[in-house]
Length: 131
Image 1 (cartoon, one colour):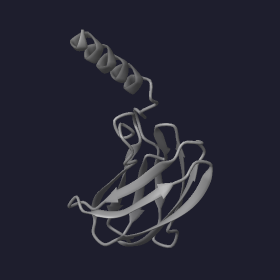
Image 2 (cartoon, rainbow, N blue to C red; image 1 turned 90 degrees about the vertical axis):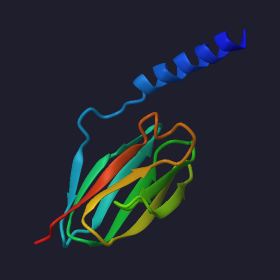
Image 3 (tube, rainbow, N blue to C red; image 1 turned 30 degrees about the horizontal axis):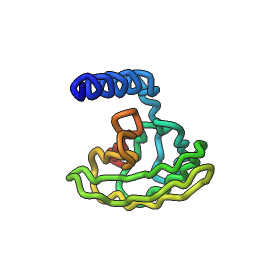
Image 4 (cartoon, helix red, strand yellow; image 1 turned 180 degrees about the vertical axis):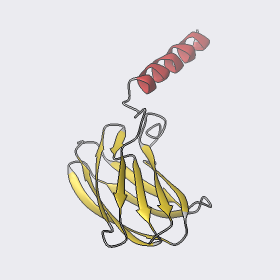
């Protein structure tokens, strides 16, 4: 009986993951060397944009508007996998997240709430050569 229940729950989670709005082609927002602010929306199981490209290292401010009544989180990891910042995003609020991007490469971000990254709440910040 428990095996059937576990199988049913797993199938339900997979079905939800398929409907979670995961971007096939993430929208890329470019932040140039003089423009180091990006506006982001957090909603039920996705960040928009889910891909950010920044020219050169240095500070970056992400203004995250959580349009969901559910609390979320924005956790950002360096290219080496070290957590740089982890900020709670209360429901129906806007929070400024300040980052120091110290090296070129791909920084992963995600919501650290259980199952949220699996359901699509994740993305990347790509730091490329600056001018």
